[in-house]
Image (tube, rainbow over all chains, first blue to last red; front, top):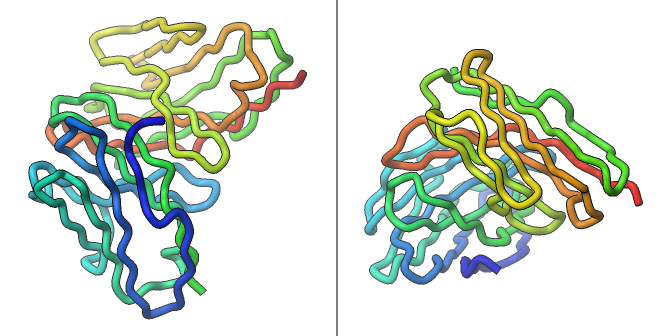
Length: 113
Length: 113
């Protein structure tokens, strides 16, 4: 148990729909990062939030957006879903930006039909 | 560009034997490396890390070796146990300040009883 919780654990959407995934960070952690993991691949960095501000973004289109709340929980929103968005979405929290250990949640598995 | 690759996608080891998982990276600017273990249906779990000013670091039953000359790192697991069966990823950090991890595709380690 890492103390990072994600919801929902599984969901199915159709192309063109929108989805919101949620993450509660570990107590005391103010940084949340989101990763996309396609089947059989390593996780790919989407973006990171530090103290409610985006702090770095990977090669993902603008239809991937996020938020971080004052309690440091976070949301990942994906608009206009495409089939290739089917993946495991992982949230990781950490304490600050000093290269500390990332603690991953169990992920939200999104299937787009 | 940045890439982290693994030499072998699968590895089978007899229980009790030692295993070695290899990883090559291409970004010479990377200065922090982490090994993660991912069991089926779970998020990645931190195993061990190493900074570029070191060439070896030991944990409990695990050792990470870093060879900056050839941009290679390895994870050695001693006296393997059935619970070591998982996918192992190496990841590199090239930008302290946003902790973006670049993951490889992973090596599936299977421990044979």
